[in-house]
Image 1 (cartoon, rainbow, N blue to C red):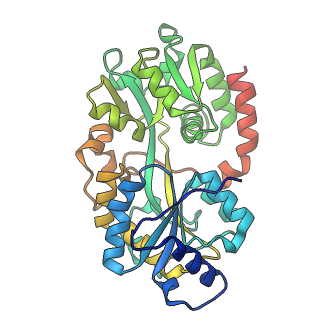
Image 2: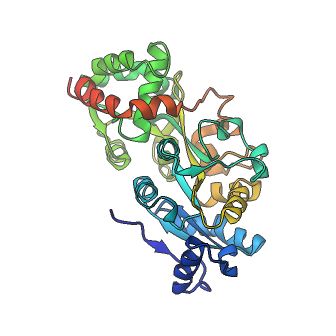
Length: 356
């Protein structure tokens, strides 16, 4: 396994400090530094922006220094699985699917309102008993489209992918990516008996497959197809439309007319976190209006604290949905269904939809 690279967030923290702190913490030592430092494992992109929006203000407010550990969701899950309570990490920021897998293996400890009072101030969907930690941001599944060819109503209709006039001009995500599972569940909800009726979803999407230019596994593949004019639209998460819309491209994003689902990114505490009190303090700050607004502005994260102001760049894509995504018809998926069936569904999608 390739472990994520570790970044020093604060210049004052010497390179040897983390080793000393982690060593004392893991061994149960009572070095005072361990109570004044936490390790936060996060995504490798937007590190500077996240530091400016959340890390530095948190340190200034609390005196707790933060060391950022970066890597993919898979890196963090593997780290938990292989090292258990010896990771030396206090907070992990992970997508909901990976959080659910780690929780199923008892690798995380619960984050409650007793530990993190701000939990009482965030959106209901962000505090879900199915997960041991709260969502701090979310991503909406929808449709990115060329505004010179389609209008929002046309783009929002699932019939777009069955239209013979658009054969070879649309794209859909593979089920293995985040938007893929949300899309399967959206189709299952729109055409079947609910978000887990994959039999109906797969048969419906298999019927669309001849019209689909590509079932993409990388959003870059999708945005390249769209900006180069090879497709006129397809399903994608809202975050990937932000820069394109802001640049003035003839591209927009819209929610589907029905079958609206979202994914969440969550803040969790490993079972063996050396500094759980510092971890809880960090999560509490991360969910505050101040941090949520700064993260939305600098990182592009949609805020779960609904009192946070949404910047114009994000509103230009999602409109007023960010004011309350649940009120706009968006739902999260039950990890008890998606995680338990994931491997089978991935195999079936490859056979019945892509290969059919």
